[in-house]
Image 1 (tube, rainbow, N blue to C red):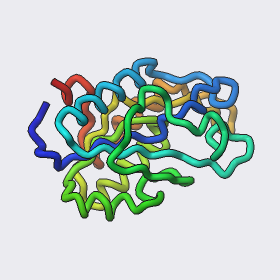
Image 2 (image 1 turned 180 degrees about the vertical axis):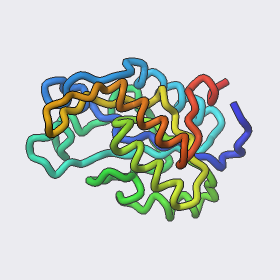
Image 3 (image 1 turned 60 degrees about the horizontal axis):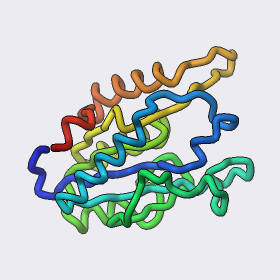
Length: 185
């Protein structure tokens, strides 16, 4: 693992049980996402580097991610206590409470490693915003997952395609795409 001296925080985004609801979200990619996120958490903890968990509290009454719903809880792989818990109802982790950017600045954090669900929604939005705020962004491609999306013309875009597009978009302008094995011992 590179020696970042704790200046890179792991940001685990929306790894919530509600995303296991296939009837609501549909087919997804990357069945290894949860295991890879768990490996990253373990590696960051072993080095005592900062870890942030982000939870999405949906305002949609039908969403499994609604506050108070079973699906709002973190998946079992997201274990232990984070250094910071951010709660949001938007796409970006930087628009939640408490203020993620302020906390990272107070901690002297210069970079972020982003993982979680959904690759092309909250993870990508948070990565773009982190880059705009001046952080070095590592987007852990194999520690994210997303779902098939149906376009307004009823064309279905597969999750695996969406994940590839996200990686291409981010690598081109917003950060470095990396994989779990590159970040752990």
